[in-house]
Image (tube, rainbow, N blue to C red):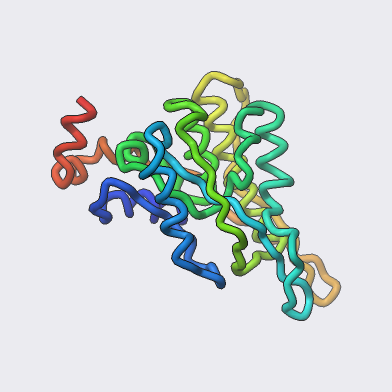
Length: 226
């Protein structure tokens, strides 16, 4: 899953600053890297920088509408943040896949293995270091492969799992029944609706700084943590 790859990248990468950029950007530009690095290099209190941008969406025929992307953000995450974490509504694109942070931040937080990783990252950084540690960068426009509604539904299912588990872990809410990891969707084929069950389980990887191989590769991080 996406979060699994981001978590493993912490071990593979060597630098003190890690930059994550989604691989499906069609209008990729150098600014996606140096724009995210800027706040970290010029502002002492910023430890994590997050991209925002216009998000055109493909319409029928392949043409682009100037806006309309970020559907999961507006239908799922922004309402949840507005209800329970109004401070985080200041993040313009909370699910953007482009962000950068110091290693010392990223290796101290858990990583859900799927699409819940951006949500958990924001919530954990806010909880541990405060809103003042988060910077935002205007990267103008991002064009990428838009997913269909059913795929976005599965993405939302994983994100909701992550959000609710965070709420329960921090004692914010108490869930008195089992949360299920199977999602039923219906696919229309030749005017027949066929059910399909997807298993989506947002397991979490521990903070990388707790992994022995990581400690051996980055002994200075272990000393700093202790």
